[in-house]
Length: 304
Image 1: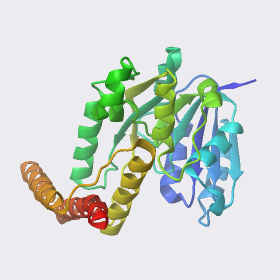
Image 2 (image 1 turned 90 degrees about the vertical axis):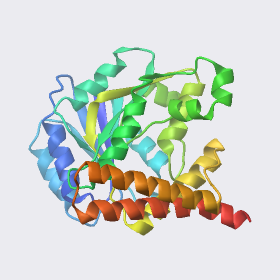
Image 3 (image 1 turned 90 degrees about the horizontal axis):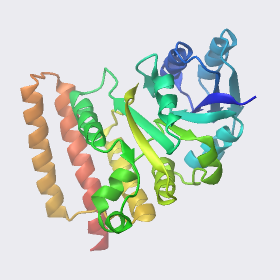
Image 4 (image 1 turned 30 degrees about the vertical axis):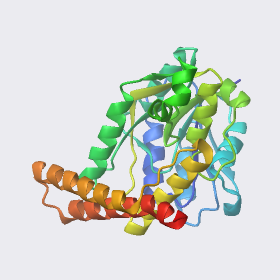
């Protein structure tokens, strides 16, 4: 018999945070049948052993799939796990996405009572030990998502000519998402190394389906990257959006300097207003803006 929901989590050396994610899943107030599927890429820490022990002592069905680390790919690996799951609704987390509330699972599944919904994504809030600006940026991002809780293409001409609208409609995040199995069977995740969620979402809305944003389904999920990590992430996103969406996110060197100064000034004013005295908040401010703008100007300099 099919289960109502399957929670899919790709893992690699998830550590203590992954264990906390799994513990939080086990106390969800969801009343229907569901299962947890972990697909692990040769973890070398003890997290998988701890998780197996945790689930062996629970009543929630649990499946562990092991793949070679070299074979991991964001789209293909998730498809592989979904194929071995049985839920009508597929919920996707990452190993560092910690549900905030005990009703995360029920809130996500309830969204699919609307038969027109093919997929849903929830809100992210920053991990409590991360700098203030990370939470500020997440708040601004997801507040804008509230403006369009149901996403579908109503006007193809506007969709094709309004880049801002198009970016909003295809935003999707598998750090905290759910998809309908019948839609996934028609449109599986593409085999891409990055951004399988947004490329899938674009295909889904262009096929006529609806997506939803669920602000009440919260997870702690954020990254406090190093300077190089921020630079690498930004360059990866720039290449991704250029290759798959034809968005040119590169700017010239002088525009990058101007934006760096403007954004840094805005961030410092925010920290002063919040009466933040922590050095880590100001360090994050400088490294975030400098790394991001170097990444955005790099492609332009290569071209010239």
